[in-house]
Length: 226
Image 1: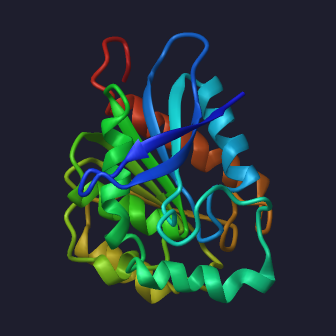
Image 2 (image 1 turned 30 degrees about the vertical axis):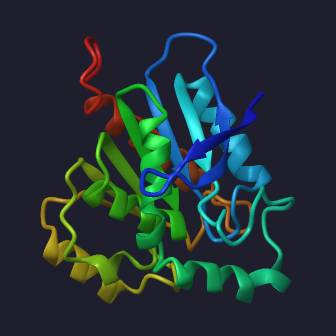
Image 3 (image 1 turned 90 degrees about the vertical axis):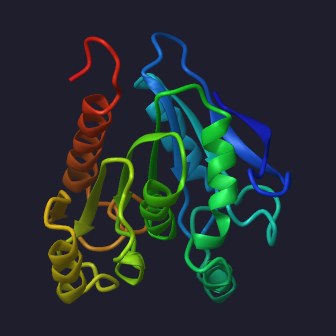
């Protein structure tokens, strides 16, 4: 359903790939999906197609393009964990790839939304605070959000976190809630990566998607959306 497109960094014009899934019917807006450390995986591409079916023109930018051009062939590969985590560290868990996120936002007609998973969840949090042109954002199990707790979202944001996520302890959740008392933080009977194949939890994945779509709809600014 989708295709590979070339986008440009909003900072220096660096060219990078993104997966694009277009809408076939009424368009609700643009959506930037931000990947976990594994990159633009088959699962993320299928998820983009799914959101396109819901009316969103989707871009999934390759945020590690400066280190790892192209898309991932598989969803996870434990043998590559150290390398992929190294990419996350080099980008300061998303802070150094916001120029690519901005390039994807700029390539979409408004309203534009963002969501991300794990590494991409932290990046979505940072994008809500630092990028221009977002109407709303949703961050799924962003493990380093607590390190950027002082950031103030400029676009309405929501968080999705598993109650048994070993990478996001309850103390981190409490700190986030204390720093942002008005921020919706939804907790699920699941662990980490409950939308991804390696940690999938059907009820949590379904409910978090419904809440995300409702969040986008409320903040779309489109007539008839609420």
